[in-house]
Length: 208
Image (cartoon, rainbow, N blue to C red; front, side, top):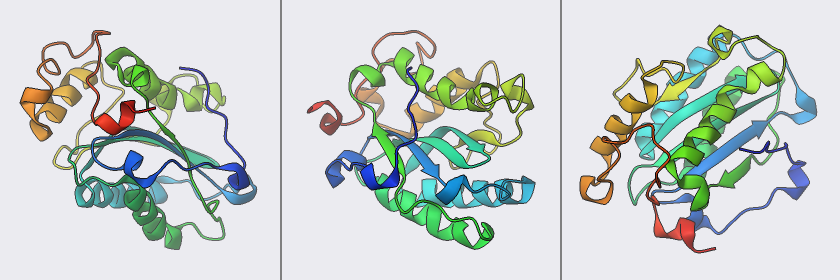
């Protein structure tokens, strides 16, 4: 997956609201004003996971990967139902994290990249998630992503999920299959690591 540069907040585009609803797949980047640092520690990470869990549960989302960086964070969300709404979830996440950020302030709008049909093929989708996980290594913060403590995954009901585990994707697709209509996703549990087409999660994501 090619790098997705952080975009100045005044230039952040937004697709129509429906692109973020239903079974959409979206790559989110939340950046701090003036690249503020000093907020990231184990205490914040614990609060982040708590709020992320509530956001995923409330808005029916799965977060296969996230990475907290010193001046921003990345996460990928998958909608699990037609009622899923990622824009509301993003606002919820930011609102409930604001009290623990101290003087650091998030930019008024997050950057998002709604994954299109080709990007939603299983191999491409997993590559996008690997891109998120490798951020600390690319930034020179650690030599191996396993050494960076501020990354993970979140699916309500599965607290032990770890995207660094060798068998992570096999577990994740099985869990995902339980949440969605099995008839619409017949291959997810049988081909958890191949590069075959990852079925579009919503018709809206293939309209462009």
